Length: 219
Image (cartoon, rainbow, N blue to C red; front, side, top):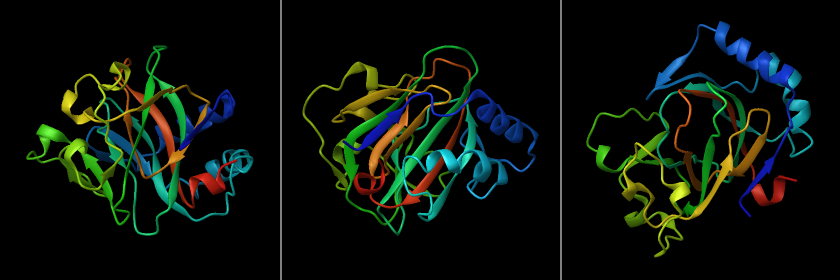
């Protein structure tokens, strides 16, 4: 298993405090419809409210290697979050949806074998001017030499994302987990993942990434 989902981990008051901090903060960075506050781990609000709770699930003294508090309107492309210093794992805390609609987050079985940099698969948009500062832009997972575990089976329709071409998901398999505010989602960073079909106008979340092997560090 390369992921774990823990429901009802964070109280509404903690979630609301992070959202309020985000809304009041003027130092946000825009990347492809994602408006984010980068490197939130050392913020007092995260250290005081989030870190003690995360300590129940993994060693929070592992090196943090970034990520953000974000809000976005479009589904993010399939990608893997890697960098020099792999192995690492992602910690995702859903914060808020614009409406009460059910929202999913896709975690695929397939993973990358090149651990030196991130990768984002954008398919037919490959030749367009898309901004990816940390993830290298690539075309399709199914014919990419760094992707392991591509299957010949037809992908589950729940994993195909509206507004993204089907070919981006050819050869992939996996799970669509609930993106529920207050829950905790932890997964191995080398596995491809992406936003599910957006059933809301926008969603917010807190994403953190730590050095360490998922299967050894996460309880």
